[in-house]
Image (cartoon, rainbow, N blue to C red; front, side, top):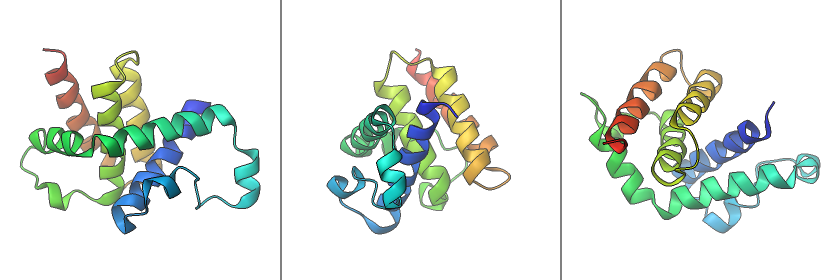
Length: 139
């Protein structure tokens, strides 16, 4: 499993935790849900990229949520399930602020996460929203 994918999983888990229980950012950056052995084995590059995604997403959460809301077709933001929302948030952050990353890679990774952690329909929903955001950012 590629290290960036592992980092995105950690960031997704952190954003999900933040949304469900408002775990403070400082705590999230220590990955408290990982067992002690997992924390010791965690590659520093993976941890650093995950922290960048987590911190960047939460620091820009209002702009990110506004962007997601603007691209939901016939869907209310409050009805987006928390797994999909966490994936959308870290991916929207990457599309908006990590211009050095190819949008196709960001969206492919989001689809992989939604297939792994979401419902059977999550990947279609996530793909549609992110593709709409990608197109609007390219104008």
